[in-house]
Image 1 (cartoon, rainbow, N blue to C red):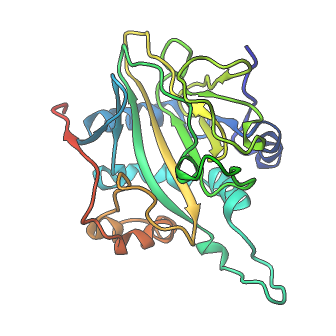
Image 2 (image 1 turned 180 degrees about the horizontal axis):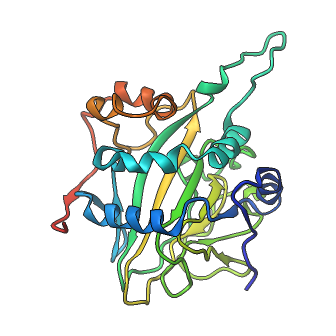
Length: 273
């Protein structure tokens, strides 16, 4: 099985080359193993959960749970990659709109990905809004979002690490409606403290956790400034929490203060402490 490209967290230039070729990249040791372990515990203690496939949960609104997740969403290398991929123009040109660099990208969500022992294989998909587009039309050849999967416990084939299809960002159509293995797929293996950066044009799917421990990650999803609340399962940062964030995190989340939350997804509350 082919391996995913892994690079030092500071090597943004080579990371962009890897994303251009494969569609995704692993940045190693973006935070320390000790920090990853601390954040994994915080994910387990977070109360609000949205159910996924059997044995899988999305742990939502992590910034509302603990401001220490801010370290992930403001990581400079991830932000630089996201700005390059979806930030748009910053140079002035006749008849072209430009946007200040500090407002180029926004944070759509920061959620925990919790695969319990025995969790099932997920279906192949594209992240929103690509998966909601007309399947009879080509997928755009540019991303409308960038996901970063922060690895907080070991990502291996046995723990149900994310599967991804190299080069699928250039195919411009939705993946097959299956959770089976696909020829050429890679398993996004990595050590705690690493992060996978993946635009939303890439086919990917959850693995099956056949180990005896939960597999824990955090997904921070970035979107262009002109995109609003993409799904009902994106929950905004609370205003009282927002006031405590750094200026960089406030810039990424200020749009969420105006989200209409009259509609929302189904949540359960964890009993774990």
